[in-house]
Image (cartoon, rainbow over all chains, first blue to last red; front, side):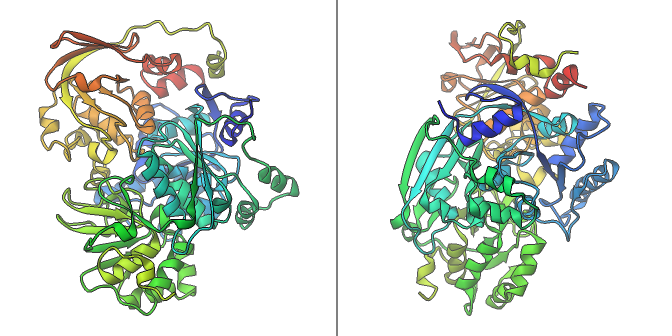
Length: 428
Length: 180
């Protein structure tokens, strides 16, 4: 029996030739990540355990991104714990506000994660890096602390589900829609404990930013990881930040599931007739095609997050917003995910488009996505966001409503003040 | 010193301990997410008591006040879905919850609970346990006895590997016992 790409990566990190789904492994990690919410707890655990040294100060990222720039005194104290720990242990990849950004946009941008690697992060959206062909999964603060101590993580080898996307991707449909369709199809627990493997011609043609957005939301189907086998586009993406030998390029491009690999399930989709979708409150699986979302009046639109705060997302949004105005009753909040994306958006004139349209542009932060700061909703308010979760009360008051969609839908809806198909606003 | 990797190779080692928990039931539904268990707005602290005082408030505003030490949270499918915040099982422990029984758990919550030593168990008939029932659970045998109703259910017992972490009192102790 052949092995899936996930089994191959895990076997290599467990020092075994093959691994079978269901087996427990004590695997070596290539890279670890913590943020200003999860790392302070990991530091508590690390220090309480009496640990004195981290396993490798080059393989740890500490990113203050959730409640930063600090929203209150307690958040400032938590961010300071990261900074102090980073200084004490000479952690190389600590990034202060101004050089940081949303972790899952920042790490790929800096070249800290790559194909075939095993990455754990104390953040559920760590699965994002599967877009680069890594096995990447979210863990808790104890897992992170123990990985700092030992360089390892315990894992149950997951069964894999394969999702094959065929056909030509219609205009205004993006990676965000691909993954929302899957979550709508299988439900929020449909891939529980499983690796989600995305493949097919329509995925191969997706820009890297869209691939990252797709894998980012594997967790929203309960998945342990999402993964897209690396190809030329992946290699070129990583080559921007790392020197790659011809040998490495060849290895990466041939890293894929065997033809006779075993899957718990295989599903096929034809994307040709898809339109953008919206996840209605209060679950990411509650999807409707945007044309059937009904007349939903909005108070706020957020374009950003680890799902859709990348340059491709901002370009799509700006295209729709250019020369138009945000509806008088709507707050548009645009959050470039990293400083580099922010700067690129300035260079391309995207930021000017957002500001002239009547939107605000924020420093990189997870802020509103998790109801932290920079756009909390009042009771009864509705928000359409390019983020990843629309749980009850997620962005503020218990009686507020969050709708999830791609950046084009978000931009069009900001203009009309209700959920709108981008084609209805933008010129063809 | 024995290396941890040994544990994954031998078939001879079987966990032989006993972990029994008894408490009163609080009922919740399917897909209880980590924002429900502890809202992100309270994550500017790591203090278990403070987190515990806000535990599950979005679903039951007085839960933290009602929960007595050793009480049991019973839920449906996919308990703990959403974020990786370990603050969720910490909050449950912090307000005195002694055990979570669910039809199924999301995977990050599952590993976090095991890692920090919050007992959890999966029972297909979880919905038959009613609010207020007194329940006794043997985590190793996988038996769930509803004392109030006089019924017993069999859960899937934990894998040996998981039992060892539970028995060690969590992942840190387990890791330290073998490596550090």
